Amino acid sequence: MSNFWNKFNKPILALAPMAGISDSAFRQLCYSFGADVVYTEMTSIDGLYYKGKTTLELLDFNHKKEGKVVLQLFGKRPELIKKAVERVEEAGFDGIDINFGCPAKKVVAHEGGITLLRDLNLAQEIVHATVESASIPVSIKTRISINKKDQTGKITVFDFLDKIKDYNVSALMLHGRTYEQGFSGSIDFDSIKLAKEKFKGVVLGNGGLNTPEDIKEMLDKTGVDGVGLARGLYGKPWLFKQINDYLQNGKYSEFDLEQIKKVALKHAKLLSKSKNDKAFLEIRKHLCWYLKGFPGASDWRAKLVRVENLSDVKKTLKQLS
Image (tube, rainbow, N blue to C red):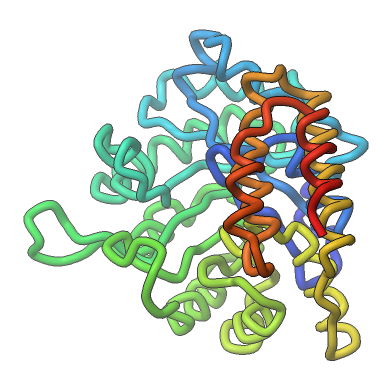
């Protein structure tokens, strides 16, 4: 099996998987700005097995314009994984990632995502089934720890890594917060550094990465092979370019309004190609993020949240100055 993870120059810059965000249009944008590898949105193992229409739509991607694409799986039924993996490979993805980190209430309520670590035997079985079924590299994404159900202690990423140490897992994306922290609080750089020392594959640091300076701090304090960018990309897919500029030259430029409007329009055009007008309404949240912080942005948002198609976006953006 060819392992593309070992062929990147370091640091590796990745678009992390984000539900409702990292669709094909956004992946194309991030790749155009310098992302080395892009992850899809979370994709249901059950949905792939039973060929759910909405799930199968997540298999659509543009290899030439997205670069290396990793599809992220979530679910807790190992017996369905082989068929799910077959569908992923038939679609042509470069890698498969397994979600052991999502803290979303909907996922946690079904004992998926990060809560899978509370049953390490099941987590091990899921990894084993995926690795055995796949002919493309398998990676995992998780968090530092989660408290046990009875609150008598915690299960850590190290407990998990020890459980799967004999399986061929190519990469680990580690969010430097606990489940209980959610998306706020300090990043545990020491645990990420230790995971890098213990895990035999590629390690990507994740969490709290909003600026090029944040990325440099993560790299310097942990020694990871790269980073997985998530919320820091909201309205800033060009963050990849800024990171590369900063790491190479020690400085970077902010995008002005005209540059941002061009990116926003390009994003809208990509979405209009891949989704119908109903789904196209997803552009509204992105448009609001793009213009966050500019004078009068609240007035603009009132117009942007009403766009219904590409023509509306073009018209509204043209009015902004």
